[in-house]
Length: 207
Image (cartoon, rainbow, N blue to C red; front, side):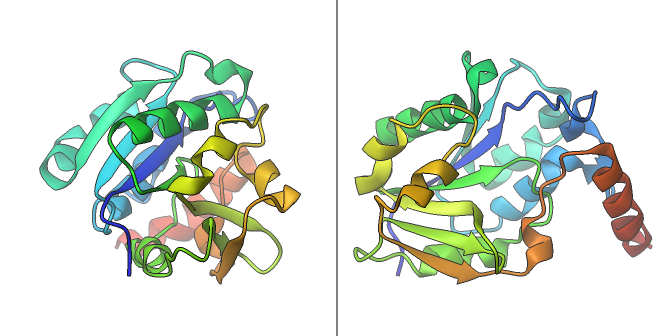
């Protein structure tokens, strides 16, 4: 069972400070790092997608706009306070989700290129009124993608800093469910060393 209007929030407003370049534009497995997860999201049961960036026309996003337009109801919004931390980009997405009548949101990180539509739909399928959130769990910690029910929106709008929703989950204020997930699906690429490692792993699969 899943809610009628589930809005995806794709957080892509980071500064890539540890990479020294826009990591979302880096080539990976025949795509770019920032577009790989989007190709899975459009195959899922997400009803509406909000992509949050700090730039008006990111190059990596332009390459996938035709696919998005033909596959899902989507929009691109700008987080003018992205430099203050991830929570501000998340809140920009939450505010927009509320405006379009979301029953729940699914929060994604753009630097997690290995998530799958099957994982997304599994999170959606576990939605119930008993839980405020449904989180991916790699055996150690909860990570995005994370689904939040509407009743948790106000709490998300109060968080501060660069920890996004994870800080809120640690407080125990919300009642949630953890879904065991393959660690590799939840990897977020933060350094050039990580990028080079996973580039070598996925590139041979193209042939």
